[in-house]
Image (cartoon, rainbow, N blue to C red):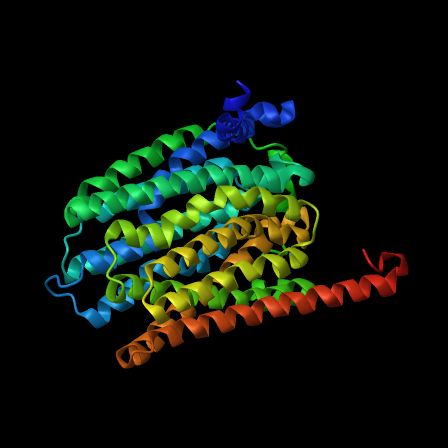
Length: 457
């Protein structure tokens, strides 16, 4: 048996990893809610995997190339749109935050999940031609808009259901399950599309049905202190400006530290969001990778890396402020962008895969920071408002960044300079990380001036 011990070690590690997700690992009061969320976030991502930015960008770019009524110039713009749609849809977050104020959160999220599933199924109705491309773009935009409401409101559910000390760890477990099933969905889409580009007509409705099953479980999640949260939100209605975008300006003016964080987050995120469109162009046009290989690089591989990296990032996030976290975590995206740049420069698929793996490390920390980072600034009753600011600003850069990289690519790629576009993405990304580092240094200096005993901590 001793001779077999080294061979059994991987099995034991996998078993230990799987057991760590069991509700029994949590305090009794958290187990039922966590268990329901865990199962629901296993099935909902199967639906979401059909419209994940990297997956749908590869599908649209390859499936509509050379089809009747599809101009290559507009196809590239449509590819940039579908890849960025998850972020562009974030512009509606303030609408969702206002609409959900004072209303039952779980029920509201549930209806948005159902709407997303139906819109994903509707994509299957459109043919592969010019009008079909337009229809896919519209349906996808509406689906991502509905899902933005889920993301915006979900943060308040997590805040009320899970204590601060373990919230990042629990969110990490849920994100890990989500990433694995998103990866499975992406791999399935790639396999099916390689066999017949028309397979999306049957595949997307099937994935939508899986999402509806996940929704049936999510509807049973119980929100702790739901009535107290509703009263707090209703009491704050005078402060809420509903659909008025000036609400964002007022919040940032009242909280200058959060405003500064959002500034550097916007620069950092701009570089990240510039990357997807030219990366897809390089995969499809220059490296000429198949559906499966392209989706592996843009979606599946990053999602498979996430479960490995999430626990490490969760431990860091549980014990640090979000500014400190971002000043470390951001370098993973810089490294990923640099690898993708080198892939374009040397026409190397392996460098593209390396960039994808590094991107997974970045996504692992990003999914935690995205859902929980604003809570280092936000009072409990204004959680959704702070999240809405974060998500809305992401939507603004979601519009501008892909257009910028699409325009640069149209200009430089015909000259053989596509790698320069990716280099610009890397430089912008790095500028944002340096901004986080400067902000972290300022916070430490102010803390030291207020309490000299904190120096060196």
